[in-house]
Length: 213
Image (tube, rainbow, N blue to C red):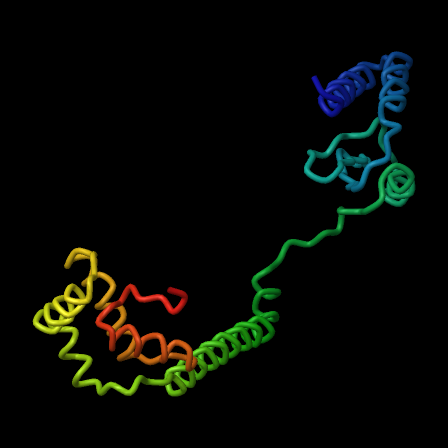
């Protein structure tokens, strides 16, 4: 049994004793609750029960714990509660339909701003992609010639030229490197180095060629 459950049980016992006219015994239980309830809490709430005011306290993430005793006035209860807890949750109002309606213009404005920001970011990204595509550099070989080199006959011709120069790779391995090479040449490069290397590989019919060789 945790502290909250103990205090709740003691509170019930004290109330029963008090209702039975056993004031002395009820006071003893109340004093015990006071000793257990010395801890400082984050929140408090005042609850009206049968014409009297009761203090309930809690920390974040916990249930409310009833404090010993009752008070004749709400003001008196609040003053006492402030000595054992920091924030008053008694008058915390729930969000109403009117609150939601009043906040609609602000929420709509926020949604529109987020939408505009998303659209703007998307447009910027598209512009950058388009600019990058426009700025790509092509090799000296025409698209018609490169498209022909991408066909089965073109691959076969290039492979035979590669083998005649001592190439050792299989045709499947050759094709797996040749097709991407031609694809990049059709698409274009972002720098002169890429263009030069691709042109040399194509001229040699050797997609495996490395300028460091």
